[in-house]
Amino acid sequence: MNTACEVLESARRIAVLGMSPKPHRTSHAIAMYLQGAGFEIVPVNPGHEHIEGLRCYRKLEAISEPVDIVDVFRAAEHEHEVCAEVLAMDPLPKAVWFQLNAGGFGVEDELRERGIEVFVDSCIKVVHSICSGKR
Image 1 (spheres, rainbow, N blue to C red):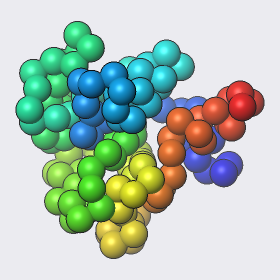
Image 2: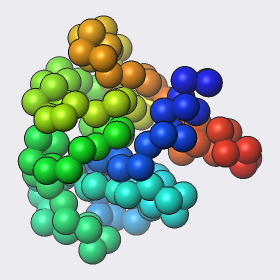
Image 3: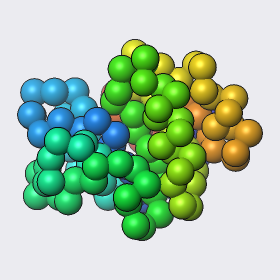
């Protein structure tokens, strides 16, 4: 948990891969929670130009500014595609956070070999709440 807390404490910009524009969807609710906690949110969803008034990118590699964390809301079957997309980013993010049921087990070694911290089957909101002392 200490590593996760350190990553969150040092992060400022989080790309939310698979963010939905629908407020009732988990990806949207967690992104809005993170924004409320002071993080800059960068939505990534090829089906939208804007979400919550924020520019939405089609792919991670299209983001021009550095990203500290990529928060993944994609089905586990897409983990290799997600990994390739993360590794195409320049600069690479400090961490990739695979949300619950978003896969990551099959690619975590490949990402770590590139110096990226990886969190698998973990809810970033829950971990942030614990790290922040909120329950």
